[in-house]
Length: 282
Picture 1: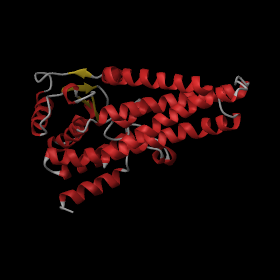
Picture 2 (picture 1 turned 180 degrees about the vertical axis):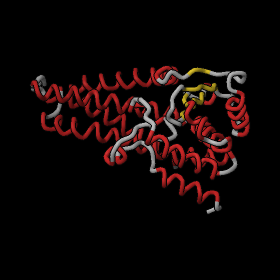
Picture 3 (picture 1 turned 90 degrees about the vertical axis):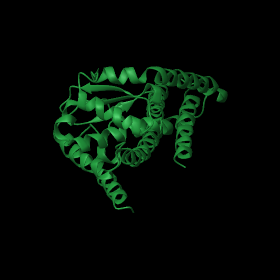
């Protein structure tokens, strides 16, 4: 059911991208939108992991560099029946972590120096198991492509806005829809794309929490870690790109109620409640 839901959401994103392309340039606009989607998905598939790791200055470490962290990843990866992922450390005070890689054979787990300072060994293992569950479920590729297409929708909507302002549209109905439709789409399109991306990310977070708990062996380890990460991340900023914020185990961005409303992460309270229910066998 989760896979079907994700497929529906991904198709919705793609159709929205094509629709805005059609409103902007008719049939040729739809073709352009398809080409953009293909190009961006190609880049996302092959290079997204390298891009995001470089973006946050993550450095790959060996067992000699970080024996406890590396050993925990290796032990949990073996338990999850996954190939050993690459291990990275980010010099960031905010406690956080994310996984990346287009498939389990090219997986990577990255943690901040901050997270290793505040979590116990069991709590850190809960976080690592969560990220391994993302890799096992191939969530990273799905969320990266969703973010890429959502970004393309926003970009095309901005182009539609400029076209409507300067009247650069053809009078031939075959070359595009009405200016009113363009105005509506340039307002609704980016919002809808953000909501679809948010739905994909939220459903995947719940799945990774459950899967990670099974890998680690105790849901309470992850629940306790999430409580600490949530409280500390609100006090310690991380200069994160909003386009990649959904990849982290907790939202690295701080803000008011409006930002929380459109957060790509489910409420921490709900995640903790689900984990505690798992621990009680409910």
